[in-house]
Length: 187
Image (cartoon, rainbow, N blue to C red; front, side, top):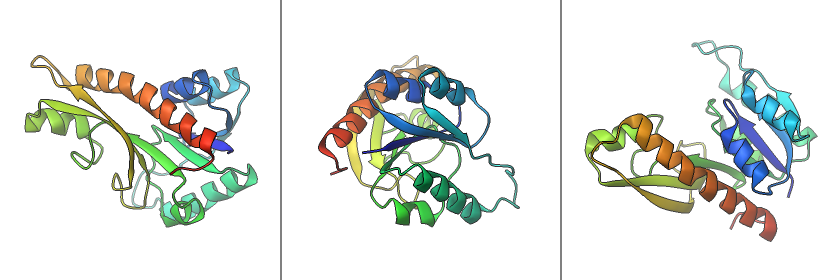
């Protein structure tokens, strides 16, 4: 399977994937970020498909269609979102149906959305965790592929808890993606 990684930030998940033996065909980023440097340092092609607007004038559909074109040009089979900050529209989920993966810092279906770690702390849960799932047009609602629990400690802050979740995420996501690539299918 030809794997693409979509990234927006520091590239730590990308580093974990590459360090964990996942062969990545192309990295696509939506803004200039460290993930480009990570890709280049591993000899992986990177493409800046820049999101130029964050306001009401952002054309999510056109942006997604252009992204699908980039992925098709690189003959991608599996799309691995790694901290990708742009919510994508229907065309990617149609073209790569069941083959877009994401990770989430909670045990879905609990605490979907951007503030999952803070929401878990605010709710007072004793356990949260990390979920690897198939991404769908409905955010954080796709089929769950893997989960692992992380204990919430009394002294936890959003930052300390999120760091422990990220440690689990980097291992669980890599293991899940590697298994998918080895068997040649998501399920």
